[in-house]
Amino acid sequence: MQNRLFALAALLSCGLTAAPAAADISARYEFEQGGGSFNMAMTLEIDGNGNERVQMANQPGYMLILNDVIYMVNRGPTGVYVTRMDDFVTLFGEMSKRMGFDKAVAAMPESATEKPPLIAPMGQKVVNGRTGTAYGISVDGKGPVYALIVISDDPKLAPLGAAFVKSFAQSAGMANKMLPGLGSMGGYFGPDAALLKKGAPLSLVMMNLSDVSFAEIDDGRFTLPSQPLSIEQIRQQFESFPAPPTLPVRAN
Image 1 (spheres, rainbow, N blue to C red):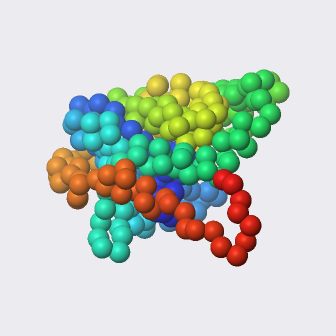
Image 2: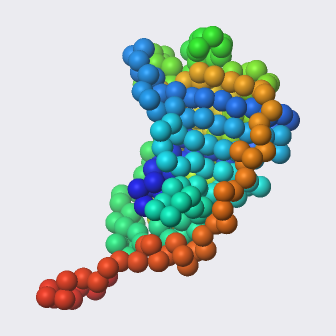
């Protein structure tokens, strides 16, 4: 369960979906702040067919995106197992409803009046030897002082930007499927998605592109290690245990 939640969080914050690519490309993004690096690197591999493999450093799992279907690969007591992200999202939504999260979200104040932050250009910036255009948040009409995102217009890196763009849209859809109403948060990332259509991110908040390779990737990297679990098999893992029989019954 913990591995699945981490995989989902990774997908929602910087998760990725398949984007057509002309050739294989591998990239590493590292989380950096104040000149120091956290050991939280994310690697992304995209083959010529647009299939992807996404891994977070030191985590016992990864994601495969094959023909636009997202799979999570994790380790369990009996070995490696595979689940479809769509099945997990469906079941997470069912569990959230049982816990009343859907009512809590519905009771939240409307945020329709909230506007996405205004993103303004800040000139050129070099990130690990690569140059791109920096953008930051403009507050009260004042120029930005912090580069929130740096975009490269190098066409060879374009598949990276396309992958991030599509991920924002899919993340909103999955959030709404888990808890209706959360999908509206996707509009908050509209300005970022628009920038990513211009090219590949060299820097995205604290996540910086550190390594890129255009070497051919072994097809085995994009092969499912086992057949995905059925949704009923996964549903069994979401079943709650009986409540204490000595306490009054509470309706869910």
